[in-house]
Length: 390
Image 1 (tube, rainbow, N blue to C red):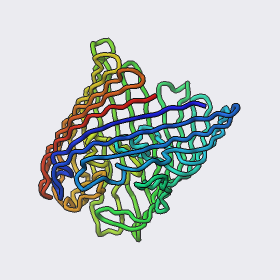
Image 2 (cartoon, rainbow, N blue to C red):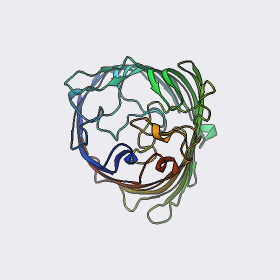
Image 3 (tube, rainbow, N blue to C red):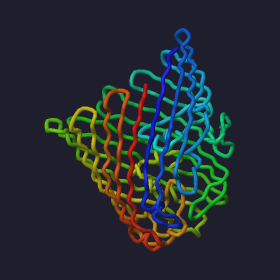
Image 4 (cartoon, rainbow, N blue to C red):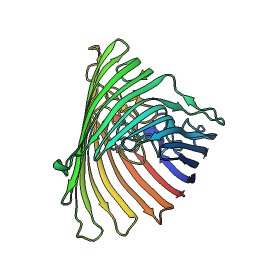
């Protein structure tokens, strides 16, 4: 039996929130505490339990669903772990690949978890995950969280890294996703969506690459779905240079709907993504979007990392909307200009030792015609956090 825990305090502010569309300045502090126990019986049996408590102060309008809860079960599962096959049933977190579509979502106070079953098969450099889940529905009381009956997720995710093809690696996956109430600019209603994806990644002689492509089909209400995305992150690290600088370029396209009257929905759905995909400010969601983001990463000393980037963003289709993390659609942006804006970010993290980590971020977003025509204004964002793990 082993025990562990995690405590974090995170303070952040927006000037203004949601690009000033229907809201003003907002600053608040989040508190999170997690404690777990891991019991191993013999060679194969495992029982893992993790409890969490969460609080928030000073958010304008009060806490949102991911902010606050009395003590509750964050994870709790039984597992059988063999040499190649593992089986797991219960409440658990899951992050796949680069967390673009499925992630534990660490930035908000309450991390994302799922209820269901999962099988993991591993042999040498090959791994296959098969799962059937419902997301956990967070409630503010004590031990009252349940699974969300309105959503479900099925999937198969395979990672292939044969030694003869090194340094090239690949992921192949399928996700089956359903929810009772979906809202997009061009459609809303009951959604059933299939995502077929592949990711190619690796590194050699200072170069690293990560390219991902996803095709989505299905239906929403009486409309058929045909959506897609292509994302890439390529860089080069100068290992022999002080601070080991890495120059990188992220380039992404996530489809939007250019003809709301044709009976089809072409807006991409990111499912359960990492909300900080573009920056810690989580201002935008990768749907109906095109962007270029040159980056510079510096590591002055062991444990200290800085990331500086300049992100330029456009709508994929002008007739569609700008999408954010919450709420998902800014309806005032339907049919506005194509240029969303650009954001400059500086993010830093310092791990003092294996237990303590300090993080900070500063983001300034300059809005373009897609937002100014909807009444949007420039946004400044600041964040600091301190985490302790044992």
